[in-house]
Image (tube, rainbow, N blue to C red):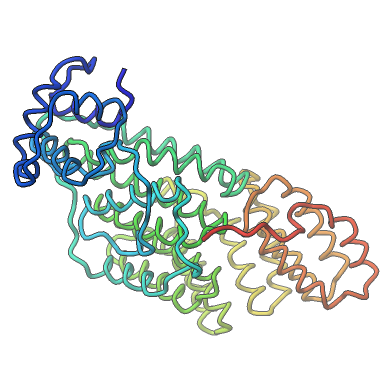
Length: 466
């Protein structure tokens, strides 16, 4: 049986092989020999070559690759990308891969595949820097003012349907639950492998325009989740690139609300990395880009992400305005209104975000109030979110001088969060350690450290490749 399953699938789709892959090799040989690439180079192939390609032998020269792609593309009526041929390659990757906002859907798919391949192969080491500020700015501007290139549909030979969209969204929900309960590092590689296996063929398949748009939108949701999980795992260079490509997919699917939410998520990452002014700008861009079609719950989230960034800068008055706007828009929200993927943002989540802002503004009393409210009303379905707000509460108690309560809350959170595989969780513990250093002579603090010293979240995380 042939071992190059991708090439078998392409040749079958193009009509060169039957479903058993047993006939048509000579026909494919003729098609390859008749390509411009083969004729220009003076190359000639036999059906033995085709058998070798199907059995996993990788052609050594680019001419042969180009001739195969041309023969298949002519029959399929589209451009066939190198990654579709299934040949094993010694993988190298440009340090800039994924940083540019895609000009059109096909370029976006090709770039995403290259990024996924680099991630899975371990070649995704994008230098020593963890993020590119210019890439954030360029992506936000391209989305706001760029000329969109929506996907094109075809009624001939419909190969994708609503079930394909439903399957992607169900997988997104599944991985989202794993992410929230166990941290981004837990199932990140499994999601990336799923995306590499499933997305390229679906996104390059024919179908009605409305179905293809929804498919690109669903692919944007999944790619955004890969970005979130990479971010949570401390793989910030990858996360930034996945966010940018997710933005392009959502835009190709003409899903303006999802696009803005992805930009909002990019703001979250920028704040975490200390790029607070860029974070505030991206949150504003998300809001600006949805002025004509936003729903209150999304607008509330855009405002609160801006507030998070402004709090870190220390701009109290602007932060207060953003928090007030977030509360006001959230109050206009009707439960169940808006996209399914924003449904997690409930009153507990809003209170948690406000608690973060008050903590960063140096206001422990309101931070304690909001964090307590968030914990009291939390659903318990997201262990990581509960951990974050618990640590904010612990920070605020220390800031208020209540060492005993701060240590009690932190110990409870660290114990409950033992199963979380998340670099962000470690960062919250690091902030607690820094605050606790002021009380190093306290017996309560020393006893607390003795009890949690062996906990996984108390120790700094192992370094990760960016």
